[in-house]
Image (cartoon, rainbow, N blue to C red; front, side, top):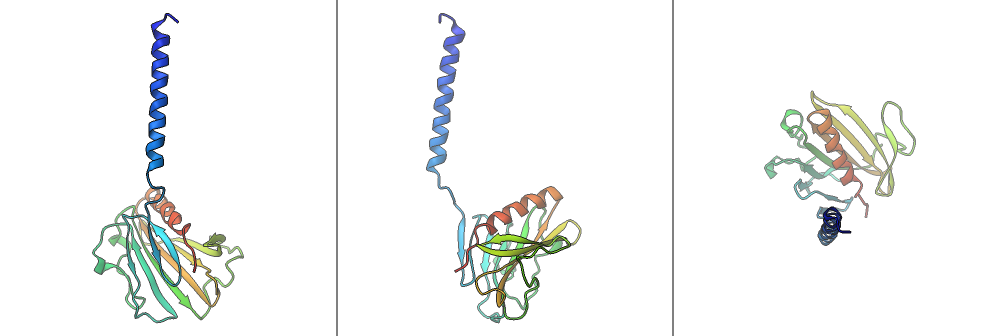
Length: 194
């Protein structure tokens, strides 16, 4: 007890305990989720505040229309793809490394590309995922050099007469693309249907 080292250890332990409590209080006082929320007639989801979102055009036909376009990098709003009839120019080398362009499209009528998304598909198509409480199909393929294209087919109520497709093009090195895909999956985990 007369040792200076023991006294120093007790004081250091108490200081460490106070620091941990202060950090815990600071984290608890911050909002849990600072993401923005997008809501349309077709679906709702949360997305990071530094991503850019544009809602789809009101003039698209009811059977296939752009619901929203999300980009994870800075662009002029005029560059965003909001109409199904206009091809999206934010692809390939126009996407900076480690970033993504995500077009969300609603379809109605016809036959979905994956007729029964609860059955596993061959060749890398994973159809066992549940998104928004409904089954979903996912396919990933290589795009132009240095890009990955990932496609999700969501099955909202009313499937197969209506469905939602997400088309993400991700650029960069494999590690960057994997990190961005994790962020996109976190957004997709928040999807809900009306």
